[in-house]
Amino acid sequence: MTDMNQNPPLELTGPDRPMISFAGVSKCYGDLQVLDGLDLDVAEGEMVTIIGPSGSGKTTVLRMLMTLERVDRGVIYVDGNPLTHMAKGGELVPAARRHLRRERANIGMCFQHFNLFPHMTALENCTEGPIHVLGLSRDEAIARAEELLTMVGMIDKRDEYPARLSGGQKQRVAIARALAMRPKVMLFDEVTSALDPEVTGEVTQVIRQLVSKHNLTMLMVTHQMGFARDISDRICFFENGRIEEQGPPEELLANPQSERTKQFLSAVN
Ligand code: ADP
Image 1 (cartoon, rainbow, N blue to C red):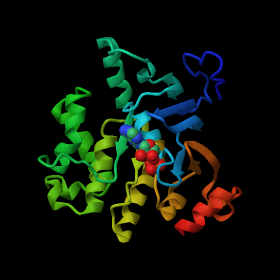
Image 2: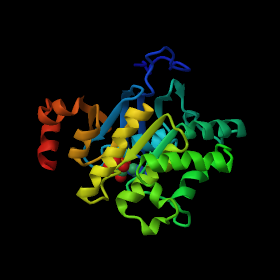
Image 3: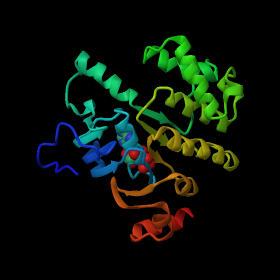
Image 4: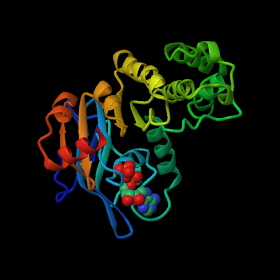
């Protein structure tokens, strides 16, 4: 972990460096301190879930990784490199903006409400980014999209528009679309919360497969404890923008140590 009172390192090196590292990250919205010196490392191939009360800063963590929010203090590293949006003040110069686009391509995100392009078929949703952002040829992009739609069990629906897909199906297409960009890191924000309990399982299964096939690093936010238990290597309980307690799901959920974690878990179960 980096001591933020010193100058933070320009990059994290070495074979054991984390894929994601928040080092002393603080964030305020006006007077509201949302993150307070957050230290959080996620190893390559690890699946970490953040749980915690509403307003504890969970979504802000994901938004910062997406470079949608600026950091007030501290550094966020992805694959050893600090995120560019740390640069404070002023407009980004074009070179920095290009760099930021490349950094963003390392990170895939799926949201609760899918956010598929409604005027594009399942297949087109998956080829749009690879063609226009990564510069793949149409044929390459289609081959990649077909492979991913097959993996998420949606190849039969490749020519359907999102309006004709169920919630679980839309979410599987959204996962394929994010993966088509070959990100190093996937972020999932409440991906099962809008789904009926019976289709949550199909999305959980798809996410599990990703780890075994792609060795992806994943950071998730959920308020569904069953999903967190089924999917995570580690669960972090957030309180007031800090990690109050963390551990493997079976330990943290079954035998929490902190009073606040106990209270939270008994309220949600
Ligand atoms: P969680 O995901 O744990 O519910 P969030 O990270 O969404 O928490 O939000 C943490 C706090 O920051 C909340 O009190 C929320 O109202 C506030 N907040 C989030 N985004 C903004 C914003 N853009 N401007 C002002 N306040 C915000």
